[in-house]
Length: 598
Image (tube, rainbow, N blue to C red):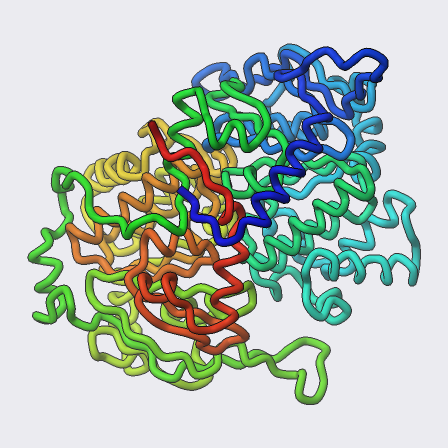
């Protein structure tokens, strides 16, 4: 149950839900009162079906889906990866990927059938009438164009503004999207932004032309909670003031409860339940909806402990062996220590004091064997920079990292190569961390081959075992990253990180792209592995509910500095700093009680 921090927010949400109840959907439609004109839907999906052709035959991705969205209404389509959520969104805007084809039903937008529009007709709709905030920021921003240019491009293409006026509007849109120092940031390139900052830029592009309908596909999955709140507040303003309808595609049930007036639950291509958001999430009827709500992490969650111990996988060290590998330090022994880390970056185009950015400023911490340390904070706080220094992907300007008492700066190339086997990353962006030209088998097998582990047959067996661990079918080995959903790709990335039986895993927003059911499975899997192998985890995340379930110690960062540290229990029970309290208060749905089971 999500604990209530305030009563006013829940009241506001309930009021919003009641007000939006007038904009009824097809599933809950009732005859209008006498003399009251029934509102016309902005978007109407009727018995809609989509199929894909794959190497194994036809895959029915969406089956007989029907729902409506009315002007000014916000609805959320929720469900696990592969349920068909994003496929419906792609079909509405005419961007079905690959071999996807509409095989039945129709889509009406503003009373017009757009199911089989031509390319030019769809281009006329996109941007000006239907906006899109895609799920993955890194794959949807052009790496050779500045952020400002890409926002201006949307404005010019839709005849909203031109020239200097377009630049002015672009900066304003980036500010609305929560991007600090937007004038300067508009001159930078995507690779100079964090994942969250890139997502904010995409939101600015999606809102640039004030569309009638905004499709937001996991719009805040890469954002910290305070920026999430700012972005979602802005979307609410569009809904109430401009009459813009919003279709959220999300796995965040807190977001759905707080921000959507209506929820559509999808499972294996079908809509299994739909209705007003609070009604569905507080009193679910379908077994699948109940599973979703029960799996959602919350601030009242307890620290996950190991579940049923699985059979020992071939080639994996036992718990005792894992402890011995640490030089006799045991579970409580120090495995990694960072001392006074500093990282300074030069900023393109800046002058004077602004020419350098102190991304990490005197950060120190210790990770003990078999424990989890979480680093939390807003985008740009320095969390991922710290992780990259630990992994040896960035050199610290000053300070030192010690692995089992040995300074990383003293390691030879051979020793550093061996250390990489003991410390594996799971990056924030599964789209960018998996080679699109490599099969899933090759993606997971690559670290085994590079480190010359096992024969070809043994490696293939190991890959199959790893896919089992992360709840993916073994048939996925023959597929490519482009054929998987975002959540499925992240599971592949986690399987690859586990391939070499590491001692430390650095998880940079590793579960942010996963739906709640798979997220719960992965977090439990990580807890089981930690118990069996005395693994140590460094969680880089903005999801405080996940931190509550997974971490032993927590570091709160802001502007490159450590704001507050402590045990997970102490920090959530009695945060000392206002910044920490603000982070906790900004969690979507934190004040709304959800169903907790019969």
